[in-house]
Amino acid sequence: MTRPIESFIRNLPKAELHLHIEGTLEPELMFRLAERNRITLPFASLDEVRAAYQFSDLQSFLDIYYQGMQVLIEEEDFYDLAIAYFERAHADQIRHCELFFDPQGHTERGIPFKTVISGLRRAQDEARERLGISSGLILCFLRHLSAESALATLEEALPYREWLLGVGLDSSESGHPPVKFEAVFERARQEGLLPVAHAGEEGPPSYIWEALDLLKVLRIDHGVRCLEDERLVARLAAEKVPLTVCPLSNVKLRVFDTMARHNLKELLRCELCVTVNSDDPAYFGGYLTENFLAVQRALGLGFTEIRQLADNGFRASFLGEREKGELLDEVRHYCAGFPQD
Image 1 (cartoon, rainbow, N blue to C red):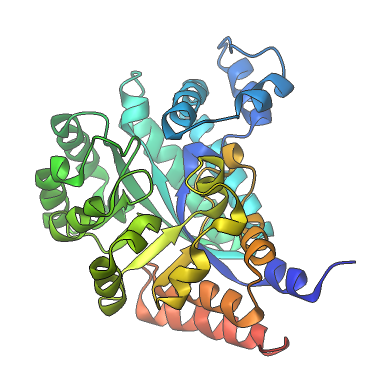
Image 2: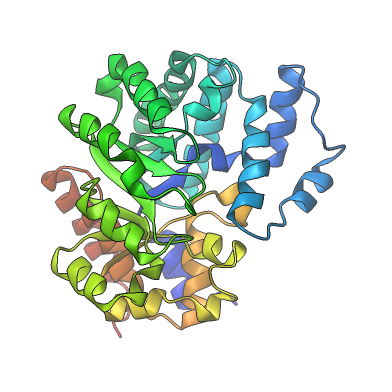
């Protein structure tokens, strides 16, 4: 029998702010695109792909993540990838999402930037018109590559400035502090692009400080290690800096041994603006609703805490105040039919 809180979560209006579109490449689509583009995969079956999705750390995940990208060649491939995610987002009651994409992972393979962004943009337009989902694109720089490569990517992206919401920083965190990208983030801010960055998942709290002080980010992606630094927690709370937390990803990558040991509930107790997201759901075993359900079950979250997480998602988004207010009203009306605890 479905518990009332599970039904509540499944139909709750949601926002997703930490989603790598390349990380939604399901094995079935990977095989279909490989066949269409005449690419030979190192896997003989879907079961072999799924067996490969056993990671010991962030780098072992990234190795297969970049390998999967090889099937993305034509504009239609990027459209197919994104519209498949939007269909799933619609089923998860997602009203708004802000998508990360990794152009360097494609342009380094000889895929034109225009091919990548045009396919994603076409899917965004369709999702808005057909599914009622608003969205924005955040161009992420791969931190294991050079700052010069990041700057060249930004310059290549600027002809499509009106299609971009912001810039981010992802890939291998350890050994690649935010300071490395200070100049490119300054250039991006000059162009009006909103800055965010992965920090404090694999890397130490000092990376969160650098992201705030040097990159001047408006959100911290992950950020779960902030609790190791009391001053940092106080700052994040005082400045209402959102954290885009990805519970299933954190457990899969051994940031936490089990979901029961995840610190999300403690982050909420510290009055931080915590949001729940799915990161790379094809690889980590669950989309947004599964992430909400996993933390609810493991941490015993109640209706009020789940609603807080949903509210935080809309408040932390880069939507305008009017759009945020309308979506928060939708959450409020929806929650009126459920118990308060």
